[in-house]
Image (cartoon, rainbow, N blue to C red):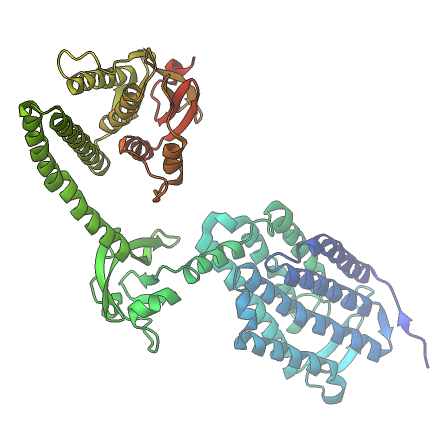
Length: 583
């Protein structure tokens, strides 16, 4: 047995050096195995290192021919699997990882496996190559052989996998624009030089056709990978997260979602939309959306309400049509979401009926009852009957007051007014004056029992907010009225003051403090919980008016109560002059 004839050349040294360079990249990328495409990228880098080492080692073997041919075969084997790893990485990295479990990809695996077997057993059939010989170039043991149909088919497979990977990566650039542009462009450029080198080697092109420079081109491949990895945050900010997130957002939500093209033809839909479209057992992709709905949807309207039949029952849906665009800003289609609002519509109808009864029928009847009770009170000589009539009058007035508050709250929240610049001190002064006048009217002329209170206003003259003046006045008025009417102190006192700004200086804090008995904890609990039960219920609508109004204004509401009284804090947004609010 003759000893192997070996020789180290600069070409072999560079090729092996390229292998070590890829090993260094492998050391860094192994930490990203848990990221989308990370495992396949690690496998790719490992395969590229194997490509470099197998061919580099082959360049040192002049004899025996069988060993040199074996290393050449190893180069092709690792190259085929490197191409597949690159293809699998492109799918997983761009959010298409589930395709790796599909039948077409399984077919690709089989094809690469056949190439592996074909190359590994070439000495028995010579379908990959024949007439293998060593013809040194540049001092290296370069090989020359006749390319067979198996090798050409293998090259075609490798080229196809690389081309498919490029299409997948470039589609990501087109779809997501600059969001993933840097890393995706870098990744898309990586196979260009290796592919050109492989074409030159297979078809024996160029000034040195026997020299395979593909392993050397894997160095710029590695540098572009490193740039994408560290310069473009390849695995820190990957397109798979967005693509899978978009798909999950459609597939997993309970709301029916249909994607249509610009002509209104169905492209895809989620499972929740299938019953509405009657698509359980028939192909409907490509059909006009209106052909599968019991009502017409106007895609040019952003939002609309329609009635649709679902399992023979008529239900109400709020339809939102959101257009989406391509990279050239041309509208491609619409995402149509259909939200079932049947329960909301029914509640609104019931509320409208109850509101109409409260605002009109009940209020009118109470006005009649109050009028007749007042006549009875003034015309009855029996003290007990007069007291009973007085109770009827008082209770009727309180119920009328509740009806007025309900009407005022409904009108303010539903209709509202355009936000305008409001002088906060002037608005508070008007509300205090109205409360004072209402207390005097309620007490009657010449009555000494009026619950009057000393109201101090500590608000800068120049303080302004941009808000709904009617709604803010309703909130402040109810709070001042509550502080005055429920104050049982010997000398009732109420203070309305500003105490500074919040929310980066764009909202003002307003306090309304009194020295009364404090708001019962049950009242505050009802407001904080947002609902009433049979054991805990609010005694009136005043605080509900405040809570609803503050919410509609976009502000915040909080209460503090102790033995010294109650303090209500409002946060009023859209401060115009924050300097005036600083104290």
